[in-house]
Amino acid sequence: MSFFQFQNPEYFFLLLLLPIIAWWAGRMGPEAAMRFSSTSLVKAVSRSRRSLPGRFLIGLRILALAALITALARPQMGKMNDTTDADGIDIVVTLDLSGSMRALDLSTQKTIVTRLDAAKKVVRAFIEKRPYDRIGLVAFAADAYVVSPLTLNHDWLKKNLDRLELGEIDGAGTAIGTALGASVNRLRDHEARSHIVILLTDGENNAGQITPIGAAEAAKSYGVKVYTIATGQKGRVPIPEMTRNNRVMRDKDGQPIYRGRAENSNYNEAELNEIAEMTGGLFFKATEDGDLERIYAEIDALETTTIELRTYATFTEYFIWPAALGLAFLALEQLLRNTRYRRLP
Image: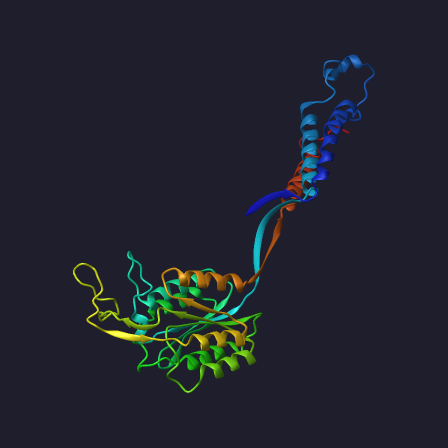
């Protein structure tokens, strides 16, 4: 936002003297250039104390003084600037891509979504709420891979989140320990006020070379806090048929087609809770629609980012223009006084 101001407006009180100066100069008149033996000879001329050229020269002098006083008041054009200093948090979001994440138990009557689609929607909203934090993304099934390193480019991060699809990782299984270890590795060499991992899974660890507790011990040693989320209902859950582009296959009435397929969804609640307690985090369960939104909102409230807004103004000085105008009026007044309106000696 731009604005105009005078840095020293008190100098404008000097403008009150200008009418007095003008009146005094007109009253006194110039010193006589010629003497006469009788005033009757110049009676007609003496009716006015000032001739028109005299008034014009006084006017130039008054304008010059007004311009110079304006310059002393220091006209400035200012611009307000805002800067944000944020003490951000480093966050790695770790998502399960195993086959059971196709289950539809987080759907509503109006919206049919897989567990993964429900998680992606909530994670996207979580990212949008934290513009000052570096966020990374790790996906896992039988193995784990880094989808995105820690970044402040959240538009790019969300595009990578949207690209996550079930079946991207070969092999059956859920490597929670490997995924947690990969997430901790993304955080350990970065300096931040806080490091956290948000691990979401619907299964128990049955793949990979690293145990979940071993990965949690590594997280604790590096000061990484782990929030664990178990999603979906336990037991055998029906799995819908999927199209080639990983969308739920539907019948003519828009209902999912199952054909008797099912996956086991038995997460180890005690182990996920131990991981969270060991690292200073919390364990959550999301078994129905709305649970994930509530959980991520609670984590968002717990892990606050310190933001400091600073406002300052920059100024451009414009005193040079009225000063130049005042000097120009003085120069013109002197020029006319010594040329066109020069008095006889």
